[in-house]
Amino acid sequence: MFHDNNIIRFINRNRRMIILVIAVIIFILLIIKVLNNISTKGTQKNQDNNDNLTKQERKSKESIITGTDISNNKAKENYKLITDFVNFCNTDVQQAYDLLTEECKENLYPSIEEFNKNYINVVFKEKKEADIQSWIKNNEKYTYLVKFYGELITTGNTKDKEYEDYITIDEEKQKININRYIGKFEKEIQKEINNIKFEVNSVDIYKDYEIYNLKISNFNNKQIILDNLESTTNTYIETNKDTKINCSNYEAGINSFKFNSGIVKNIKLKFVKQYNTNIKDEKLVFSSAILDTENSEDISKITIEF
Image (tube, rainbow, N blue to C red; front, top):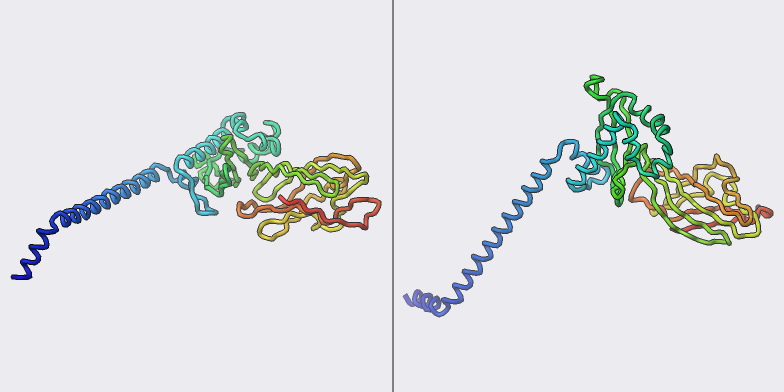
């Protein structure tokens, strides 16, 4: 009895505090419930958004290389742009050609006649449908693995005359690069070494190789040779993965690496390298440069860091 009286007395003395504590607990429980409802609705909304994507659009959303994905709206936009291109290739070559970026035209198809001959007549001899799979994203460039099949209605077999391409969308330009051409990446690197000015203006990157576009000025009063061609490993790229990738366009001969005094010349260097956004080029190395052709035994190493 005495114990019960103490409890009653405690409650009476602390009535306001007890009511406040109970109110706080109820408030917290209500907040938790509201947050749970919001989370549930958000999850349902995301599910609804996913349900708005067709099976093909979903494939254009998630990269098979990195596992990352893009927004539903971007997946729909990119899927539509590529399917528009495919439809134009089937029906209107001019409109298909107009969807190519200027650098794609410059590097691969400088005229609609060449595009028609070397792409349309190769891939679209018959009408084609496309299977579009997200492959990799690099900044504003989205690359897709696209497989072209003969139309089921006309061929009776969707696997008929299959053709595979890598198509890259330039988001800023809303244009595309085809035939495994990823795009042009500006470098704008200038270095002067041993009175030779090296300007690395850009790199044209393809799925399987890359081409460096350089402008080289020889300010020496002697003729120079940047690669004596005694080895196919003289000129190379060093990457952030400590790998060396050798230059592979030696068929042009030594003249492409020879610079008379005062000459300014643009050259292109090709390196066979699989496109990978995790592997970055860090250096361009000429390991057998001759700074005076009258003294060809004197070999120098020139390194251009990016």
